[in-house]
Length: 107
Image 1 (spheres, rainbow, N blue to C red):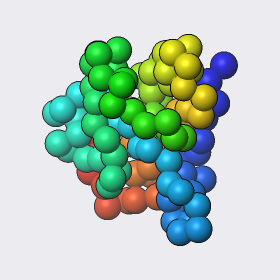
Image 2: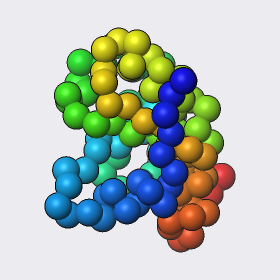
Image 3: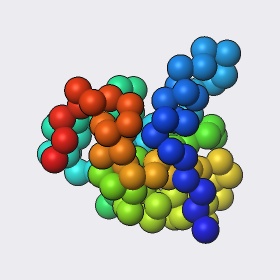
Image 4: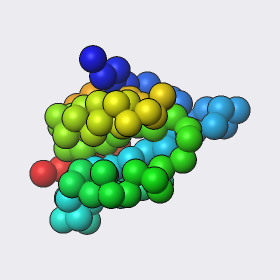
């Protein structure tokens, strides 16, 4: 089972200047990222992950999508590929907008 991180917990982790922030991997489609994204995210669409996963550093990764379904699938794929520290953002950018950044565009 893929472990998840809640939006508020991710926001707290990103705000912690003493800790190294995780890589934010946004796996949504380009049109979705154009509408909104969590600042600092690396955008690699879900369908390109197998081709581009070599671009991912050996660091903690939080996978992000719209509601958390695609991110869970990608997190499982990365874990199966040997990445050790991978979480899925529970509720995706929708939860981020609702709980952390109410100014974020929603769709």
